[in-house]
Length: 477
Image 1 (spheres, rainbow, N blue to C red):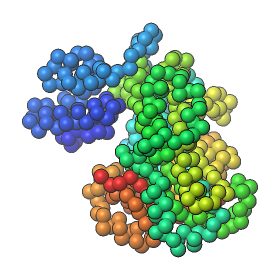
Image 2 (spheres, rainbow, N blue to C red):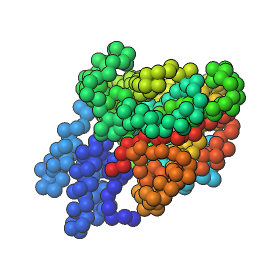
Image 3 (tube, helix red, strand yellow):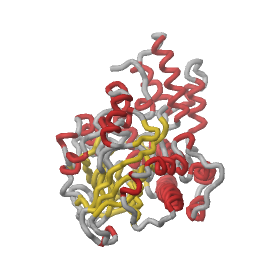
Image 4 (cartoon, helix red, strand yellow):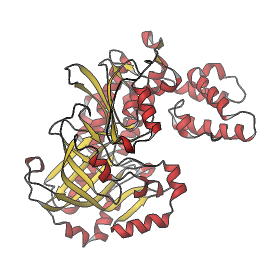
């Protein structure tokens, strides 16, 4: 085991980034000075996160305990009482699509998920890999009174949006410098993803911005980030949409190639703050064994549960507005209205009915909704072809499909394995222009998309293909 603490380990205990950074820096010093082992530090940080008041006067951990206590949600009444739960001895069965390409750690993580007393059914999509709580590419149905913030994820309502124009794809390929400039002028990513003036949008008229004091406190942050995209695997890209069949779902457009814009991002800092705040309440009120601590749920009948569900849905509306702002700007720049738009969430929880007619909360963390007839978008990497699909409503798959190709290796492993020159060579060979991005998002770190699609033929059918040509991502730091 590595002696170094990393954010993945610390995030189990500390949801706020400043706490992760402070704990990481302190832990590094203590390990290097041989005052504490990594195992002992993790034990202390676990206890500190649960009961920071016990460490306030500690000469070493007092500062972190004070920050932790300051950031703890204030619970009242019945919500202040923790309820302890045991896991099932054996996990419930769950469907696995593309099992040959899913690693053992992901399978073990899903087994823990399926031991939760509130779990009803689950499935792993062929792009599945380890995440926090529920694996990315995991789908979980829980009893209708239980919602798990970390089974939705930190980037609430991360979604795809595709706009298509009745313009020949050659128009873009012949004017690459112009289209590259369009992306540079009309998109914003990461920490620089802020606007100087709040953009007008219908989303601000939603009455739920005043539903709770916590939501009201986040409105300014949301206003400064609307129309922007996150870091990591988020992108906005020009590409070519190849329609494979004439169908009403795609506006009866003729078979052929069209200019298209594809974006991938979520609810930015607004959604992340919601996730961190209510995840902490969940862990404070739902006692679970350590291996399942980050799968703590909120009771939907409690104030916290109903507030989280309302906040999550508002984050969904906000994420949708983010994409619409970007696509409107591009349409205005082109001077043409799109003839088709397709979009879908993939980090969300829905109230749905299972095959037996029972009600459930279905969490899709990095999984595309794929109920019968529902359209979705499954991208690949910055050089590989993605797909527009139509759901088949597969019961075993819980009406879901993959949300992409899925990572084949971690970001740290990618940085150790590949070089920037290898990435540039790959981009050149595929004829793709990249703005920003880095080695951790290189096409080589992802699973083969064709293999992923073959593993989910029971879940979706392919209607069109999208090939990226000019890609914008957050600057590589």
